[in-house]
Length: 114
Length: 113
Image 1 (cartoon, each protein chain N blue to C red):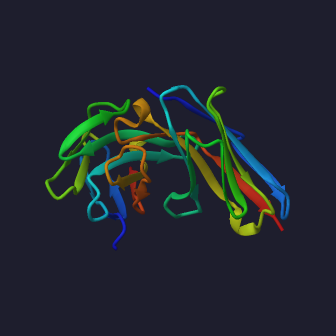
Image 2 (cartoon, chains in turn yellow, purple):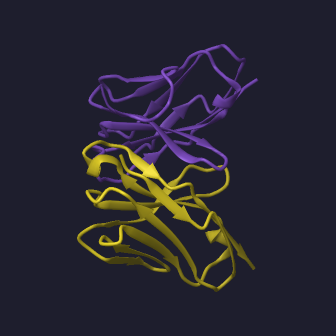
């Protein structure tokens, strides 16, 4: 099965700075990599995802990069704001996506200080 | 359309009891996955159902079981509850589960005393 490692476990930045969270995965058959944001007391919600046919994807202040050779992908948040404070999870599909579940990293708690 | 709905939102049970949690997926979604969330352990996969069949199972003891009905609603059951089963249980639905967006419910917070 898939194994996803996520670093760092906690990240503290000043408002306006950039934040980067990195994940590695083990199954070379994986081809879909979503990122979820979970605010305190709320459900995880998808913020961006990338498929293996692209190397980078941007959505306003959020971007994700993928390096299939090295089997790692990263989340980049620019111009951070206090409302970006949350736990972020990366994920990859198990068995190349042939079944429906995702394997998640252990999460990164991002704190943005005003 | 309505999102993923989990019931109940909160449960308090005693060690040794059993519990059943329910998940209603988004209309048209056929895949339902269940996850256990505890502090420091992230989201751990329990099992996934598609068209009433369990397609995959995580590394949890046999006390954890589930099923899916013909309308795609899913239930999970935990028997002989232990203190360590206290957690937030989340379900997620997707169209077919194959590399498509998974939408999470609000979760059921289970406390075992």
